[in-house]
Image (cartoon, rainbow, N blue to C red; front, side):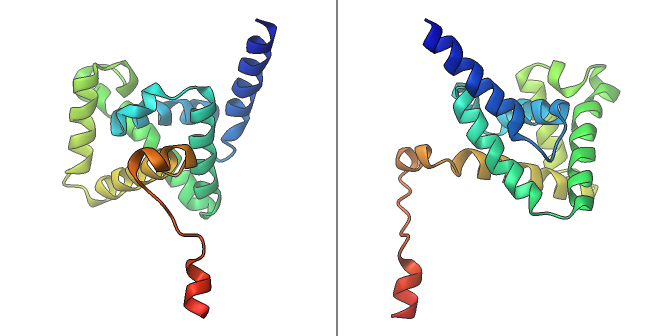
Length: 152
């Protein structure tokens, strides 16, 4: 029993420390949106969420500070824009309504919002499918010696 409590606390601590490029609130909201983009995210344990967060965090860390700020601002827009129509932020809406909101952002007439949505989706896909433990499940078998073949 104590081992499980200690392990859970350690993984929870790792998850809490994993996002250095986003505030805790933005990182938590990103996971809410990620569950709508890739429904399997809801089945991940804390360790899987932590690994996904680290992948996303590393990708964001490679971007300029201005891009990271734009991404954080876009997350705020996704969270609060639905309140204009539904009188509630994104994370308080029903799943079907959340899907409709994301669909609207994806097809929005404002190009900047469409680009932000595709960037968000790309990061979520990278975070989920970039975990090595999901590769076999999706049939991905990378060849790590491809560079050697190029130089042969």
